[in-house]
Length: 536
Image (cartoon, rainbow, N blue to C red):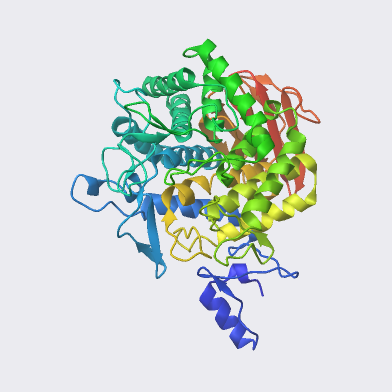
């Protein structure tokens, strides 16, 4: 009897009729286990489970997300515009009071989730949803031009605020205080939105962020990072000196240098300092400090899985960043296991049915769906490089666990083994889902059979169209690598009508093909020129 193919009620009834004990129920779903007692996805067939998960979450946002409470005009906007979380109650949403609005986490993660889903599915409606959210943030969440940190993004605000000015209601931060790392992440999002739309307002906003990063860069040490972690934007006062979540800032500056936009010499200097700090400090010490956007962390020995995870994902896309990447990536995965899988809080489990589940940060180490997805993404992509089957197994079981954090309608339960923990829009509908595309890149067998999909790309894709025997897409930047699963063997791969060569690896421009069986193929493409890509 296959649990993943039946509803929970039907499954329990079927087992009872057969005189067998019913399976466990976890987070509204009957637990599906393999012959070794290890976790399978709740939805079947298994090869469609992750696709189903991603579609459910976006369909919930498109059709079921609640609106904000009044008064107008706030009530004209979805709840996720102005609030960080909701409570799960009786299988549904309880809005009530909310803690804050984590703008600096929500905007980058929702953009990444949307642009990857668009490339994967061809559904451009999700990009419209996120563009509207980004536009609101740009208009209502940018610092005054007269501030010490001018034209810089607000990363937090109070729950329900329609003008973003900082999270002050809990007395954790002061007016105009921001996390510089998350502001850098927003700046990177502005630039990537410019690549997608071509609208100059996003490029201008991205350059404003980059200019402040270049202006305030410093040589990082063990106690003061390459940029201050938190500042008060009007006065310039530094309220926390050390952070380690700088990959978004680095990628913003690096992208502008490659595009020859903005103050390129200053950006190059900042890039060099950022890279040296990351390699010399957190990569060696393990102090991947970040308190997210709601915790007043002021420490140079604090650990956050987010910061380490962002470093791993960057290295997987840009291994030249770190000469020791082949040893550092598995060390970082082990670091996550040591501190956030097998170190637990409040009696929570480290594993369930063979799945490692992952906590968040030193002072809030509760098991989370999105942190578990981050870990699985790193394991899946490292398996593709190393060939070590243990990483594939870890990724598979952890991703399966994340699928149980959805109900049948796509409502997310962020932390189903925790008590009284809300589900955050940024985590469950942005940060968690976007990790599945990394996993697809590592293991394309986990994408649906008999379908065509762009599984993952580091770069933004502006236009994509799918047909039975043809995939065409337009990358926004000249060079890059795309990972595809196809239901046909490619006879030709061309960039701007110039045919690429089939190769055994991607050490130079070309494409590789791996037979997945059943008429399906994994195709990876490396480009070094601009233009539309056609696979046929």
